[in-house]
Image 1 (cartoon, rainbow, N blue to C red):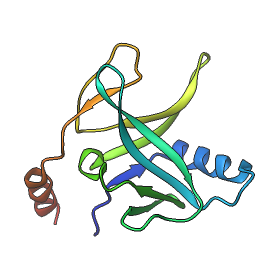
Image 2: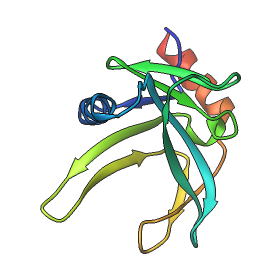
Image 3: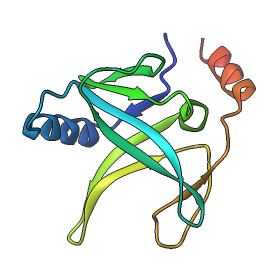
Image 4: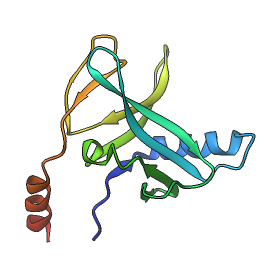
Amino acid sequence: MAFKIMSLSEAAAERIKEIMEDSDKPVIGLRVGIKNAGCAGVAYTMNYVTEPLTGDDHVTDRGVDVWVDPKATMYLLGTVMDFEESKMSSGFTFKNPNQTGACGCGESVTLKAADLRAIAEARARAI
């Protein structure tokens, strides 16, 4: 069984499919990354993919293609992307085991690189 960098909830996959269908240009998936931002350190980025970039990591989950910026891979390992709706807002959320903090306004997070040894040990126990 291959290890996925990140996965999607059913709600996230359905919302991404809707967004792709509503796009005015042909879109084949989504690219996820991180950028320096906010008071906590980084913010997640999401962009349409019309053509994959060489070097991006590729994940297919629930019928959706997601490419991950290689600079973000070590910070996104084990992340589950979700889509949540409430009476006041809706949007994508990231349940990231590498997150060590967040700003009060929710615009940015603090991330640490994934512990590859812990991941390897967990995979070995699962086999």
